[in-house]
Image (cartoon, rainbow, N blue to C red; front, side, top):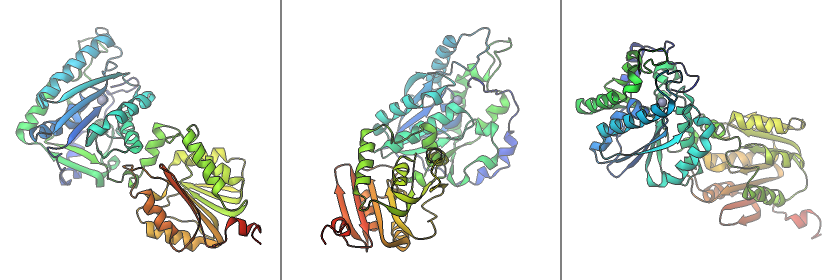
Length: 447
Ligand SMILES: [Zn+2]
């Protein structure tokens, strides 16, 4: 529950879900005993509603589980005449401890005490906390990124942002809660869904945990403002004999919306504008370009458009693409006064611009492309005579990179002449051309 969120409006009846294809989902593979699970939830009760069966079943296999609760859930009854937010916070912490004990008596619990209903405004703190702790875990479980509740979505986005900042070898599963109430079967990401069947003993522990959250499934008092947050019609979604999880792929960037989520968590997810590292790297890339002027340039993965703006000063035409709508908006805004720059929302993995190119700039994008050989082939086929390719990639491991920088550069350099090789601990930058002519020779200095 959060401010501005009205649970009293009618939602989707459980009979709709019972008639959906949920019963045909492939089974969830339970964590291995060696796994360490971090269950990050927004409010006390999320852990039981969405993942209580998982916690109990994992505990039975000896998996270590740590339940981290971002808020105390003290905004669940903003109009209560009988309970202050502080009283509710104390009650809900106790309810959570009792519920977790019913599911897994050995589980750790941690309360972060962030403001209920305002997690999206505290994404930075949540992401920093996760970044500092993720190395201790192998599996992160959060509410679903599209759960129709801003606090729940914030947990998922903080998780995605922390994982993207890497290097963490952590899988990420998500679970719907309010989507069962507000959503319809059409809203679910079916190919990513897995089902965890609960045996009778596990189900009983989940029911016992659910019973602990008295402040949510029962009225605080008979007074208006003290109504139950979870009436039986909603609780029915959580009394199923199974739980449902969204299992994100190992290469999360292949998931539509991955980059949109990063931009939702931060306007400039990689601090391209502010960080000295990024400014210096941009300057090195621009200095490495072997000619003063270029005709037509292509820059996929243009992000916030900072490099685009610099390229626009040296090119007759720049085609800038990004898969994330927020990135395209920022770049289009930045280049609004430059009609020779074309900004489009398109994916490098599926598409390539028509016509010949004098310059291709691949900055921090190659590792997201599954088929590097096909990418390199498209680059070569599109280059005009004397066409130039510049590639620049982070060398440290990152969980959302399908390939390391070295592989990306080896593929791109095939059958081209290398004019510049710049290598440092953090990134690799290469410039290739269809022509072997050096910069000095091209400038007439060597005669
Ligand atoms: Zn919640």
